[in-house]
Amino acid sequence: MPSALNALSPLDGRYHKQLSPLTAYCSEAALIRYRVRVEIEWLIALAQDPALAEIRAFSAATVAELRKAVTDFGETEAARVKEIESRTNHDVKAIEYWLQERFAAQTEVAAAAGFIHFACTSEDINNLAHALMLSEAREKVMLPALDQIVDKLRTLAHELADAPMLARTHGQAATPTTMGKEMANVVHRLARARAGIAAVRLAGKINGAVGNYNAHLIAYPGFDWEGFARNFVEALNLEFNPYTTQIEPHDTLAELFDACARANTVLIDLDRDIWGYVSLGYFKQRVIAGEVGSSTMPHKVNPIDFENSEGNLGLANAVLHHLSAKLPLSRWQRDLTDSTVLRNVGVALGYSFLGLVSCLKGLNKLEANPAALRADLDATWEVLAEAVQTVMRRYGLPEPYEQLKALTRGKGITPESLRQFIGQLAVPEAERQRLLALAPSTYTGKAAELARRI
Image 1 (spheres, helix red, strand yellow):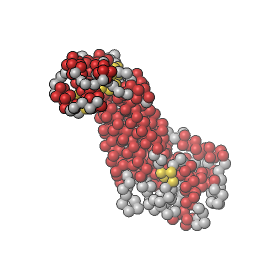
Image 2: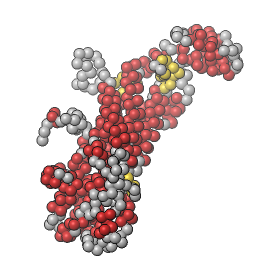
Image 3: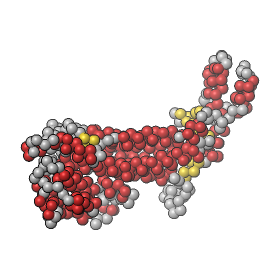
Image 4: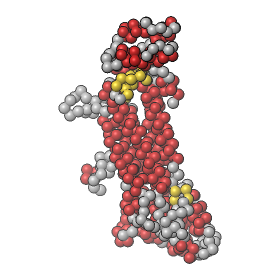
């Protein structure tokens, strides 16, 4: 086997081990296995319908044997399919020949060999195989990885709900929040993005060369092929598409890829924010024994996990956006541009998965630094100008905004000077005392409550 060092893509080289959960669903061997699964289920479905008299119903043992060929399908079987493909120069036809070869000694299947791939075009098999691949990769790999990040962020939101933090709008000191509330914001966004990914119901079809059941009906004119196809597709837990050309138009694949990209965008936003908080000292990173932060500066602990996550999620979105924009386009009844592009589904999900793994790794290293959070708040009493001028507005004092603007804009302000200003205000004494007791660290509104509620 070639060394991973010679892999053209880092997904198959540097990151191969990290991506092992995904290769079971999105590798070429996995795609071949999904094609085998569709072909076998189609054959079983045909045999089970008594109206198709020329193919006899399989025994329960034969059905189990056929399905076992899918569960047992591994690298050896995939390699044999590839050997046949080297002769046929057609990947789906190679699977038909492999199935005939695999079950040549099985009496019931051999007698029905002519019904393997019956009335099907390659895209009948491929669209269902890709839909199954993506459905299972989504459920078994991608959503669980996203859920781990959401769970970790929710934990941080609760733990840091009361940790006051100077907010920054336009990069400048702004109304305080809490670190937990900032994590809760992301939890809410990711939960919504996750629901969008999970909600996409992938479609499928098995209606022949141009979507009209031509071959099906010429063989069995009186048979309800559309109803049969609908039942078959829906039995695979896919949405039946009754109107297609030769290809299923991939609209639902585009919806899924767009939904994945939206979740990735939220995570890129998180990566950049956490990177900034680490830079400000709001978070420390747990040191891992033996790791090197910089090749020349021994003191450094760089936020490399968030940088790695951001970079890989960006690559993922570039591929995801191309997939969603390109796949629904096909000249007339079919061209092959979708076929070669679909081979990169694993690339898109691979870079997405790397981004998720790196983000979670980084989150698990974080430790809040209350001293740094408090120091920034204590140095920016001018952020209370909003609070003071809003109370002034309530009691009708003249030009509250302009007065606070003159007092605070573009210059620092001390607790003493702010309290002196408050002491001269013509407001009820209870309100004056409430403002005098205020500090940047306590001016956080409902932030803590919102963070604990997520």
